[in-house]
Length: 36
Image (cartoon, rainbow, N blue to C red; front, side):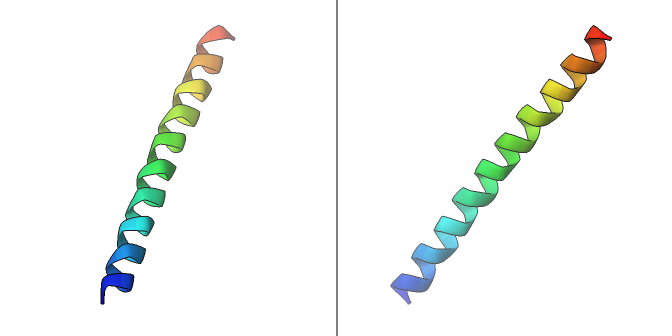
């Protein structure tokens, strides 16, 4: 049970990281679009 909980937490951390990366990518794309 504890192991499964740890995996769920790990998955949440990965998803949160994905969200941060996606947000940064979106910011870069918007920034690049504004330069043109």
